[in-house]
Image (cartoon, rainbow, N blue to C red; front, side):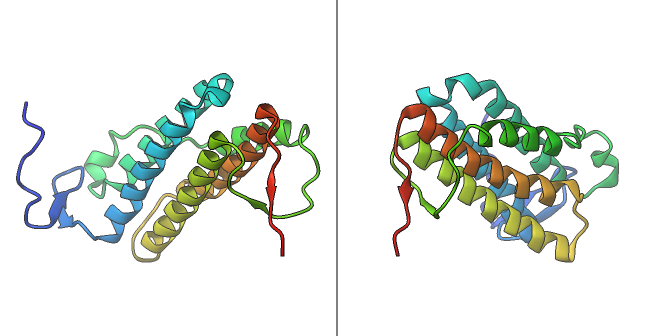
Length: 180
């Protein structure tokens, strides 16, 4: 099977269901940013410091793919065949963060990305998650978006912030603090 179709050479792409939209459409910006986020989460997961939590990262990556499928579908008939949205995952994320945060030193300053490659990668995930959230919110102003998606992305960026701090602790790396 060929990977290329040439159908996008005119600057359009097909949504699930066949509707064609411009490649700079808000919907594509939203689910394209989720795709980018999924890629950087995959990079984070390859750091040895993340091996213990790799299954959790894979769960989040699958969630992102599922969220993207909902954003890529406007045809109600096609939407019936999509995977369920991860309705209970936000509570799981909060529990994961609470468990990790309880073991972290008190936060007394803003933290700069860096100190260890895994820590920096977690911050990249955090910032791309925030951008994905902004793209989804922009789309939601002009189109129906399941309310779970912006909430999920908001909480996910918090997960990556806590993860960055957790990785500093796990790797014995001092957090890089912002100095005025």
